[in-house]
Length: 414
Image (cartoon, rainbow, N blue to C red; front, side):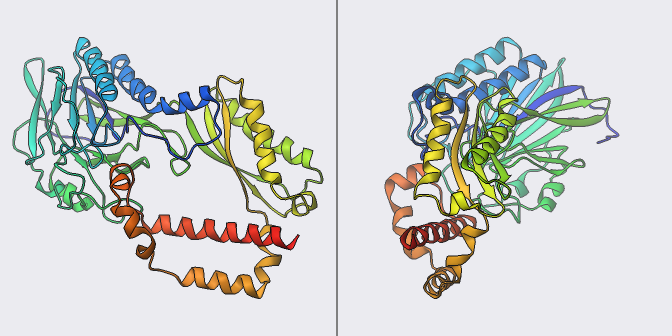
């Protein structure tokens, strides 16, 4: 991105959605050391972000919301961040923070004192904070923190230049128009961002890494810093941004502590169970070669071999147990979270059954999920720890229900 005005050389980190204190619900049958590593992964990946800032001699870090997983943030998580921020202070690195829907300022927690290199944006209105370098105004950073969990107003549209700084950065934790699967908090359009005439937009809230616009302005979701379940697969981390010689460039840095991945294998040609296990071992070895821990879901595709179609009930769970036993002594573990059978035979014979077809039609026609989930979403425990269900979640629930129904009917017909 070329600018006519003179820009001071600046290096900064853009990260979001650290989600410290994530509970990692739904992980079962884990050895203690594996569970401990996964539970601590949000802290370790955050530490990796701050270490990168020091190694790259960054001028400042932008943290675009949801540093904590819930508004009632733990003292442990706060003290962890304070320790990291003090390290940054020792290296003359400033920290600019907005809080989002998970860690909004309306929560109940034990307040602590942050170091003076930490600049937290207000929840009352858009605020500008000036960054000085070599005694000169080098950047104006604009941001807004959530006063409560649900904010539906377009705060991005309110961000406008208020200084003559050579670099202007907007920070918003919210949803770009057209994004599905996320609460539409602080919704905005790309045109809203362009109207603000910022040079860079540091976004947060969407956990999938996305470069919405590469220049004029640069608009980026860095994604979260650490995956927490199978809907957040792939490398996670932050963006390293450089402003040099009037040009702005950015680079993604992978910093997650534990990978979450999905592996698919075609088992059409296998004749024996040992061949299936061997294929699975080969697939997992590719993750092991990376040299870091990973949680992997294995998806079986192709035509269902006879040994699997005619095997005893619960055979997939037995295979899972075999792999779990092999991983108990591994430091850089490759933990098999689930085995999902998507082979053709599993989706053929019984599906033609009239009874199954009738049940399937009723499931597909059912749309009013609010009848099921309204009471759950109003429960105080869910409101504190859970997130609202979206259309994508309903599709997943329906698909899983169909698979479970098919599996149970297959078992009954044996």
